[in-house]
Length: 493
Image (cartoon, rainbow, N blue to C red; front, side, top):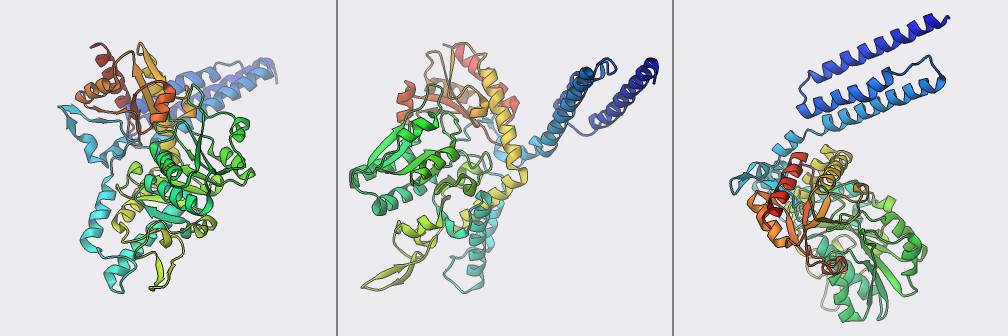
């Protein structure tokens, strides 16, 4: 083939390719998509694709490689964008949460306090109302129809939780009132049966009080020792070798937050579990800030205990979960005594049910467990990978925009890849309470104070921070409102 013919062929190839892609893309842009998506699709067309089509294919093999690279990059970005936005209809999701449409002080509510508690979708409220209206009866204790039906819903919820975190068996799923009770359950029963005076529990500087105080109570009762891993100035744990030096022959348990509720730091839990298990030390993971945001696989993590709360993942308050490996739940004594958790009672001796019922004394909140299962269904329908991608993009955007504010101090990892859905900050000398109060007057709900993490505040050298935290229903527009609100408040001081 002559050079002229080859050049003509390459030109025709590019023309046909461009025409085909633009035709299909134009069809996409004419569908019912929001303006932001259309703009981003058009921008993609005018950058990656244009760069690829302007390359001289006949000049050299390297140019062909460059063409393939640009074209592949375009297709990859386009597919990712369409996949994310087509599977993540933010307007539809927000309509599932009526409270998001209300006003506060005459302004649209911008709810950015999701690390404290999330709002509840209608399907969760409807499911709980339906059970109270039509299925209400005590579980496990009756042969009549309503009791059987309520029991089925309750145990179906246990199976739904098991599947959600990929536990081996429902035997390993204990219902609690929340993460706090779950950690207290382990602290009390583990220390009673597995620890002696002088034995150690290892936590970190970034723990919530619910993973500090229960162990300190055992210091007073049993004389155990609580040690804490330090963190770096940017809110990360030390390297694996340093972590290993904090494990001694007296360490009996490591108890660690999966995600910091202040810094948003995502801790390398799988690595920590591996290091601890090399020393035959079990690990408890506080998953209150991780379970709502990305997929959890307790078998893959290989943790021995994992705790999380329903109300932080779009479910009802007063319900939570303790996952425990069956071998450990069998070894631990009961947490509380009463009905439900017994096998047989006599004046001389009482025998107990096997887990999980051994740890569930009294009537459970069987309506809340149904609500939790419904919330898990909702999250699963949206898709945890979609939620994680959406929230990570919000976090990245928030960090980027906050850094344009003079005198702002942002706490935690500088990269959004190392943190999850939480941004804590201070601006100049403005007290966190003043900032939070004035933002509230602008309709912006953030959390202020020590966030139940006094030791971490001491490590950071502050009394408190302002915290914005994201959920699946938050938007970049809300981040813009937050940033503009901070600017406005800053100008008042």
